[in-house]
Length: 557
Image (cartoon, rainbow, N blue to C red; front, top):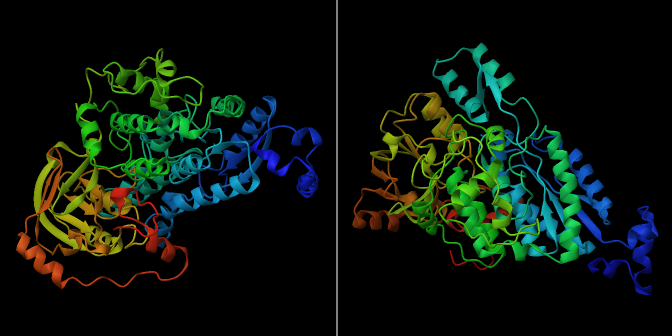
């Protein structure tokens, strides 16, 4: 056992004395020691139920002959962190989670791990850690929230943020806003649409790191508790067979995740996290090849904010495996990849049928023949920008308009709510990238304000920051290189014509090369906004969004 390094032999007598202090019995010390990474806290709605999940995992591990040992991981609620300086501290936690979990697992020599995440950065952070540590590992998440109900219709957090814009525009009353406030988020769990948390929990299934239902079983269902017990039992089988994360998270598995990402219409944040996970297994993930996969992958789901269905509906329709089975009808998946079930992808999905073609479109009748995400390139984004194509109104897939330029999110929001943004404008928010923010804030407030003001089908937004999975509309993020390192987005001036063609994967500013060069010569780097603490260290190491905002020493760019 790996844990023998801290349990066996005379040299380890001091270690055993410390285990005695923990109340360990001799019998417990003779079993494999399984670390359970608990992301439980009392500030994130998607994590308030994780104590119950952890307890169930512990039971499962003990039933299968392991010794469960719990230690924590942090998690931020992106919704609560939204729209203020707190959002600078969201993305950066992904790497803190990975680093701290690596440190705990290596320091204590666990034989196996069960990761218990749920919300946005927690899932990719723990997937990154799993790849680094590479001991038998399984994931079981906390599950999605049930949809709220307003006026007899299902709703979710994206509607709540848009209601704020509608209130500012005078389209709803204060009482109606309060009704949204009281009914939008009715249970614990990760927010009920295909936002970042649920995107990553679903992709954990696709990667092969979670059991069936990990991404879709609602947080409040007892089935989630049963899933956790089975995860605890199954990690012991992985231990006995020595099946480790790098046996599962291969390049083919990453490509499977990207394919299902396109079919589900996942959050644009998946295009930050998949490259970061790929980096941990030594895979060079160029976001531009997402378009190659998108060209052959139909979009089968329009979950909120792209459409009127929610995670509970996807679960009832057969879940992630049913989506994968549809894709496999056209041979779009690598079905020989190993998974935490001990079986291959093909074996897992072979009998998983689509139970509701209104929620999961059949492969021959998709919402579109191309995937939900697209990577755009051009003189405004030489290294790429990302858009959730499935959540863009058809009339906005191709447009030109004058640039309305803002150097921070707050100024843009003031302009939108103040009525300064008109139909046909292209809002540009810069110096909000990984390095410039620092921290690459989500722009849910401005996108929601645009929607709430009734401008969703006529105004685009472009940023070197990122978007919430709850954002919808012509929202193009991760523009790289970012403004802080002198990317072309730093050179855009008020009134420049911006040309967007999502179907052609292009994003350009209609300014001559000579003029752009003149502006580049006159450009002066901004003084860092934050010069102390973790954010300063993060800014010194982080890459642009096209590389997944990974941390890198002696980076090339």
